[in-house]
Image (tube, rainbow, N blue to C red; front, side, top):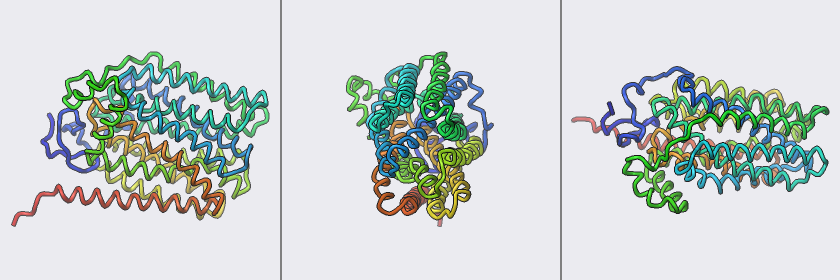
Length: 450
């Protein structure tokens, strides 16, 4: 039974109850669900396991590209440029990936994207093994990964909605973040160790990444084909069906849909700013560890692993609360913790303290990202799931693009000043978001009777 039109969305604000628009049922209104409830769906379990291996391969390549860029140039600016190539490609592809997820087979989209990522990893390994590696190859590899990430991401999340239903969507998204976070515990540390081990080196680490990507591809094969989300009876989907042959029109419709709804617009816009500035810390870990603390590739892997351990802990703790009415308040707390911990990283006096602070950053960032996804996707009509997810994914393009000017800032003022600037930007954004959320909640309170 649906609640009245005064029901509250997971971000704590009222919105219409229009059937498929993510309203809470009585069963959904419980404060907690089982931590691993969504994994009880066999198809989602396959998708989740595939994601574990896909994220492991991707995270390994993130670190390997940073290590290789630093080895080739020893320049923070070069680190930013490599990340910029990823972000620019992701920004271009993610909006089209959202349209594709709403119109085409999500399974086939993921299979295609995973195969391209697999071949790209093999190509980088061959270039390193044969000694023909050049900086431009890093840029091509980074851009290729961005293009495929933009294709796979919306398809993965919108398929998750179809497989588990809205009742467990927040739980499923948080568990997907757990798979990403868990892969970050193993993958960057393993990549750093392999890169620093003479028997493997960077080339061997890329080949290991390709083998892991192959496992992800194989696990995608048994997944079912999913329905065309625009073929349903939703009245919101009807005008979109007329534009199916015009992807730019569909992108515009998706943006208009999200921006016209405050419960979608606020978290999406805030996440773009927060992740654009905050998540760029990932790109500059080699500069901090090797350039400031004077350590090596293994220590870069260890500090990346510390961030991931924090993210795993946060994902497990949030999995039972991501579908609760308190999700919006938790999101705000995570955002403020994210900004404060980046500021603390700017002042970290040594590597050991930096590792502890980075663990907090990992927990706060994954908590913020997971809850934004859960809140937004629960409030989104089925016909727009792919396109709205592409908007939720846009912040990752923004952070990668922002890495280039941040790299220039680091060259001019130092890595510590850059981290301080990032942390302040995140904190200010969360202040604005929390004030806007409080004002919106207050405007929906009934007037006090006299």
